Length: 523
Image 1: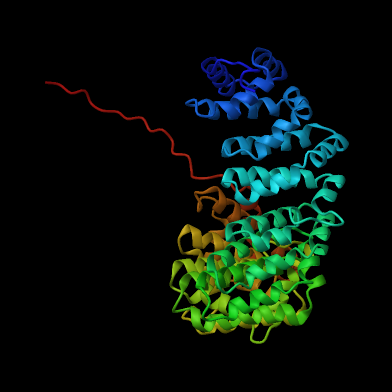
Image 2: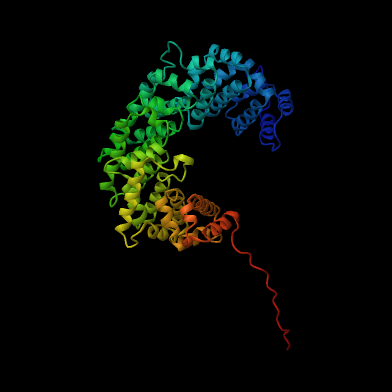
């Protein structure tokens, strides 16, 4: 082939480098001009036969990557499928990666019927799987992107999930036969596919592929693989439709088992708790997960606190964060407060009694979630029993401290550093929707002064949190005609309203330039 397509390697290297690294946007015209000078088949041949020429392979990779991203370049791909197939099986990782990228470009720029037909007829999909499993990291990423693009077509899904699969394409069979790294990559592909849509997730579930994730999460023999599987599960539960399918698996049970296993690696327990929090932060979770299941996993986290506070600060913070994630959703917050004993007591104790900065910060943010700072409207307040549990827990905690009252505890938080103070604003923003907390807040002038002080914060996030807190206090106060008419609180509404009207970003007072006058020096 080299004789049939003679090309000067030095000239090609220079031209490819100029094209690849030209800072101006590449256009169809520039791509066509380059290929008029060096025909595509000649370039592809040089990529395969002159890879030992210094710098040529890298330059051609960057050049062709740009060429195939133009519409003109993409239009040529269907005519060069044999070269694409050869590239997918090439020994060079750069060539394999380029071939995977080319497949993605084909799918992005060609109609579904033509693109899927070419991929099916050329046997591209099994080669993409091979690149995923045994390519280097960049090749695997490019292969996964191409397969995900293929899954975006209805007929493409039929290639990935055929009525009868072969050993070459069955993800379950491939996972059983490859290395631990290959298994993790297959799991990563499954998660990517699952996250596309409910339709694709259904195909993943019906193909029994979630069982591969279950197997690795429950793997007690390889901590690194288990941790990788947990990371992928964390990504999977971000999909809004995930609860419908996860509820049919044993994954929640497996997470509970990891959390409860005192001999498990601490990092596994930590990740399991965070994933659990992510699962239960989804409102849909409580539509599909039965009450015993979510109470079991909450209890597993609660039991860990007895061993954590003095032994493992990182795991303690993860447990706190998991409870805070659960509290993002109204039903999750209620479940935490109605559990017996209520695990929220650990959050409140750490938020107001813990002397360690990291624990206290995590607990305050978790409490902010639980009391509804991120929720809106009718979702801020919980049902009667859960609300009573929250009120009782906060008053019980405050009564055991030198501050004695919730207002004393909240003031002490607002008097701390900016990170703690920001978390404190979040807690007050959520809590002040409760009449009992509103009274605590407005009865403490120091709290009102801090919340309305437009010069108190210097960073944008702190300014916004303080302003939002001020708005929440104003809204609750003006909703109570009884408090509004109380002479003891005269002028409070005006003070809050003025602070709100100033906006969050007024910042520091402007220092006025002062004239400097000095007497003339005489010698």
